[in-house]
Amino acid sequence: MADAITLQVEGMSCGHCIRAVTNAITALDGAAKVDVDLAAKRVVAQTSLPRADVVRAVEEEGFAVKG
Image (cartoon, rainbow, N blue to C red; front, top):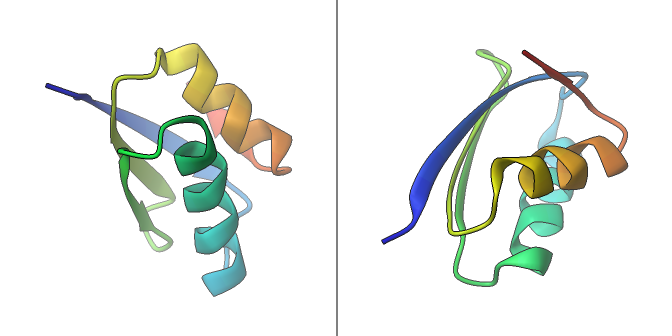
C-alpha cells in the first residue's frame, strides 16, 4: 500500500501549478494519487516513492517545499 506524503509548498497559484506538480510526481510513479490544495499550499501524494524523491520532483518544477 502506498504511503501518504504531505508537503507544504510555496509558490503554487493556478491550474498550471497543479498540473506541473501532479505530472512531476506521476512521472516517477504512474500509480501515485496526487491532491493539490492551492489555498492550503498543500500537496498530498499517495505513493510508494521515498519522501525525498517527491520533494525533489516538486522543487524541480520551481516550487519551494517548507518543512
